[in-house]
Amino acid sequence: MRIPPAAPMRLPASVSTSAQVRLASPIRLAALVLLAAAIAVAAPLLIPAPSSAQTPELVFLSNITGTSRDGAPLTTAEEQTAATLDALGEQLRARGLGYEDVVAMNVFLRDTRHFQAMNGVYRGYFATDPPTRATVEADLPDRDALVQISAVATPDETEVISPAGLQSPALPYSWGIRTGDVLFIAGATSRDPETYQPVGGDVQTQTRRVFGNIGMVLEAAGMGYGDLVACKVFLDDVRLWGDMNAAYREFVTADDPPARAAVRGGLMNPAFLVEIQCVAEQSDERRVVLREGQRRGRSPLSPAIATGERVWLAGMLAAGEDARGEARATLANLGATLEAAGLGFGDVEDVWVYLTDVRDAEAVMEVLAEVMPDGVPPVTVAGLPLVGRLGVEIQMTAVVR
Image (cartoon, rainbow, N blue to C red):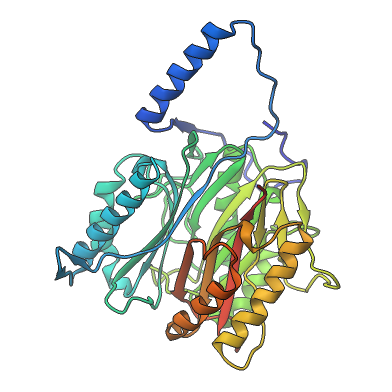
């Protein structure tokens, strides 16, 4: 394991680490055991070379809904949650995976009033060591859908991160799950670490508490704020963006802050003004990627963070005469950033499309289909209004093959 950066962390001195390892599924584990035994017999003196990099395989599954079963429409949040998670299970099994391999989940609800009903069903699918999760209210491209999910899974070994100083969540999610050098952190809100109760105050106060909790997860995983590579910020009101930014920059590194998207997402508890979901990755090759001629902006985010194994791009947007024009201009910026990292659209493995008006989804998807050389990879599309006057924001993750 690489040594975390020596940058100072603003964390309580009393924080200690508690982690639980989740192994790969039993079928894959048995196969690995048999393979290891065969290798040991055939080459008993073979000593594997030490590896400093632990790059996990990540599987992205996006925009899953369940609006009917056996041809009959499903009209309740409970019914749709079950059908949606059943559909997720089918997609996982098609890839040789199971629910236990899911490390991160995003749940989008058409109405926050469906939160309790969704959770009641969700618990039955993830009763033990549930994935990290963020849940927000959004306009959904499927007009019949009440629930939509996107997920990240891995066939590799995982480790549930449960900081001793952070109260276990009462809801069905884990604070953090680490696989190899990558850590997925649940959407964090302003909660007291000892009681799990909401901590009120303005958006700056809440943002600082959010990062305090994120920092505890990072430290329990052997990481620091300098390892954050990508974040999603969901604001209750986009007019809070400036104040949130002021507190946000106190925690991220000045020279290479994580890539980021910040949008309006309805939060599940009216006490909260902001929710932040992050990914961290330890890498000795970490660098900021700027496209040719680009300069760093004033906001505390990088256009992209390259780690040697992946490139985590920020949510980008650009002016255009309509949604198609905005999408084309935005994709031109994303393409130039990928090129600066030595990659192209064929290396993209995950796409997020944030729309102020979800009715633009079809137009944006048509543009994506024009640009992607090998077909469109998994795409999460949600009506999450942007900061500013533009209507299309696109965020990507690419892998170094």
